[in-house]
Length: 557
Image (cartoon, rainbow, N blue to C red; front, side, top):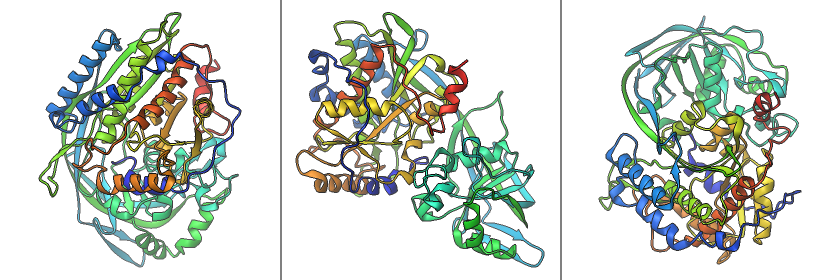
């Protein structure tokens, strides 16, 4: 997966989950027993098995598998009596473009006294978002911009005082907090949005840079350079921006640390000294007095895919919404494995989350009274290509962001039985975590923080696009403290999943799966939504969240 690179990060994330997290939590939702009982393992497994069946052809956008998946969702939500969510339709069309970049096999870096020849794929990986057939990077000035971050709330601007228009910016991975490990610098060890490579490329474009190169380092990145190399001369999908074009860098990509060391040496500097200084407040960007040149060839294909939207209209405040999300897409039909299987069914990733949307919708329909607020069930497309379905929705919301109370996201549910723990991603972000903590404690369970917050998992699934526009978003992950077997067995099971099934044809519904554990997690998520749907409460971002200012900018007017 382009955006999350889960097989590298999550096994480590699960190790050594902490004990229960104490919080000044709100009261539980207290849904009726008959409503919660509507969440059953039997019906959940039926939904999951249908979505992950070979007939769905791996649910890839732009294929017949997409149409089969959308037809199934329409049929099942209609059967539940859940109405269309987009002005009488269950669908929101998402126009996209596939950009296939073929980069030059070499890049030349010239200084006053030295010339470096970089080898494509081994020393650097580059691509473009532009749709021009040919892109030539003629000798272009290179500028070091620290972490490439502009964060007013942290009083940090790596672009201060320097015009990088039409230049190539070179920057460090992650954010300053990781390198200092000081909680007073950004969030210390925990990655912020500013540490995400996607943000760095976006900011470089806002600054008018011609190109943007991130220096790869395994520890702060959370994955090895071989993961980056998987992007060499491959196709990427983006939203179709024709008619509303915004500036895009001609070149985006990564260089290795050894190349960065040579690059700074050619500029007469010591790379490690520059790195240490860059993490200190007040560091200024500076020209490297080097020029880079290379080229890229591009092929493009335009097509359309769809988000699926259903809703239960609120009885007294129908304009206020709670949105449940899960991505319906997976990888389609690809290279056959050793058994000859070429269908990438995506049972856990993410038929498990979409089946959860149906199951929670069933529970809401089983309530004796209609929810006061509207409850939306949004199955988004193209998550595997870069969170594009949710990004499109965030740019073109069917329900106004000012009236959206919260987003609750489901992605890769735990198939190995009930756990005592519930892993919370992005701890410290919003008051929604207090709601889920209260529900977990009422169920005799506990909230566990993610083990590796520096990995930035909160920024790597569809809820992130809701957070970016200020909507408080909740995302929980699979626990490992199994009721039957404890942490040792739970960790082993998850490690086996990521080693043997994740993004492989083997991600199917297996006989040893114990989906009653998923249902227990769904009950918690249902209770949070039920509480919000039946109240006038508006959960807020917590102080220190990078999304608080966005919400405040339009909610406090």
